[in-house]
Image 1 (cartoon, rainbow, N blue to C red):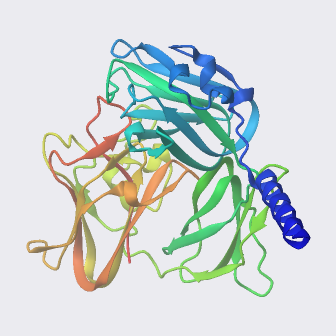
Image 2: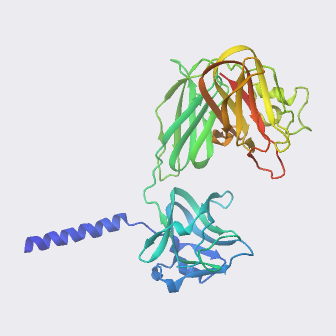
Image 3: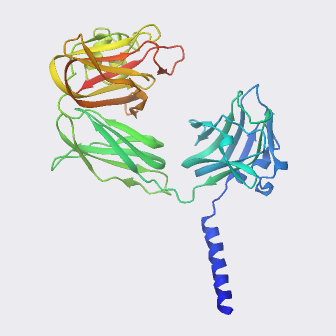
Length: 416
């Protein structure tokens, strides 16, 4: 009997120790909370244990946005947020805002409380945040928020779970190569700063000054410009966070740039004939000719289309001779781009064949190493062609940061 007693006590100690070591820390009770709710303090009061009688209730939905704001008093890596909903007043469309300094917000939209899971007769919604580094957290319920019942949002409790052992976990390094640049995309498990070291792959080749990204993020991307065609290069990615997380480096990745861009300097016509800042840019070179000059500068290299609402917008290029091609790369301005464009090729400028339809520039690699842009690479089996056309159909979907604008914008077109 004594043997079993010792085993039981030892097992209980191990269970309690494991619970102590691995229990998730809820940091909501130490936060300052404000918002358009009565009885708001119960939201972070763990003593209520999700009791229905201790719910916080919002003002009536309909006249204005309603918020719950948390100030955690310090920066934390956040693993997840749990919302314990009352039986009624469950919001079906709301957003979560996270910020380190109230200057920039990371927004997670389209959240639906009714999709939570039942735990002890309470609907619990878990929002995974993957170690977002934040101090300020807001739940934002728009004036048109839909509720499962009633006219008031009702929440029993909100837990903000701290990530105990955040790790950078640099992974998923992807890249695409053209003649004079390399577009690189990679991920980290938590918000991190990043930089890319690169240089020619020669015995005595020196690494260039690193390409740095100072805004912490989990999705990273950048473009190495000004490279030589048909040349071997190597690059290395390094990510770093706060002092509590060490930096990580990738192995060197060895690549070779493509041969010369076939579109460089070639004649081009179409409806992309407007400059972004007519007052400050010389009109000596027509806007559309800047699409094949190799430039990426906002003022001198960007060409704007006409109205997408009024008619098809297009660019047509003559390679001057039939070439065997397998890739077209488009550099779209990130503040004004097509969400459904087509790429066509032709031998005679009369009979056209579509090699890509309904393409969304937003699916390309986003980069802010210069002007913000999406680098969209469309690859296809090798095909003989002399003429290349990019078509944006009338009334097709597009993104424009300014609501009163209906054009799309390109920096450059490259053909390989």
